[in-house]
Image (tube, rainbow, N blue to C red; front, side):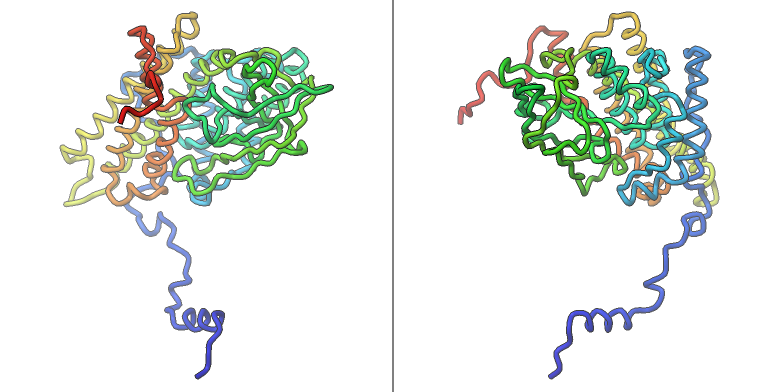
Length: 437
């Protein structure tokens, strides 16, 4: 009896299949002509309470500029890149031309936006694509802001101008495999040597890290046992970065594992203003406000998509928008968004007046992400079968919200930050780590 090789068997199977098995899929507009996919993004319909009037003319101009770019440049390609889990590097110059990287930072080629203007920019990016907003937020509100608030004048002059133009890209590395919510216990070490420092350790979930030119790394000073900050350049000997695969959310974001083995950082790249974990709080105060505006933008996009879809799609001889239960869900989504925007706007005003506390920021982030998850779930229901297709945005946004619900403090951790502030009792960990069983 003849024994077929695996290649011969594969050829036989292929030849036995009908030829249509090898055909490319139909374009979604041809396969489902009754509704418009997200590649042609719907107009904004979510500002029911006319909250745009709360913005200054400058902030409104930022909103329109970012919205126009995202709808024209990002919407047509986002599903393809999300599906492939790859980053569209060719759009970086277009995002750089918006002039929003650097956010609230003044000077050094940065835009010097109000915190509300910076938040609006993040929301408008997230409205079309959450991954793009995370890319900008990590680069701008974490890495750049750390250099701006904690770096030396020489570091600001050296790094910020090119980062503001997105000519160079940055990441921000705090989280480790063993320390997520408990980030202050990080194990990566920094040991003083002649002319600089030696970094040893590992970081995980670091957005932008696989292609970042500049990596802001936090490590424990082996002499003081305090957390210090360092600027590490890509291709530094001993530094390796690998992509985390198989994510279901923010698939365009290139999250990486960073491993440092005997990585030398010169003294000039030690961030002098980071001398303890508390020094990261002034950066996180701003970034947590920015993160709160991501789910606002995502929810706006979901609503806009559902609003158009329900008017276009017909069943039982009528548009889906004509059915009572669909209207109820749509209005519930709309109400969520009005409340989310008002909470986000108030956070910005508290920050600008110097009154915002960690509890304020944590409650804003946790409550807004909770409402956004509800909004996404309702949107998924409204789109029926198309609610699981990334082509119609909602399924993609549904998945993208999950990591946002978790990062910059999980819902539970942020709740406990606010709980500590209103009760005076910290409840982050049990009194004893030992089981009583």
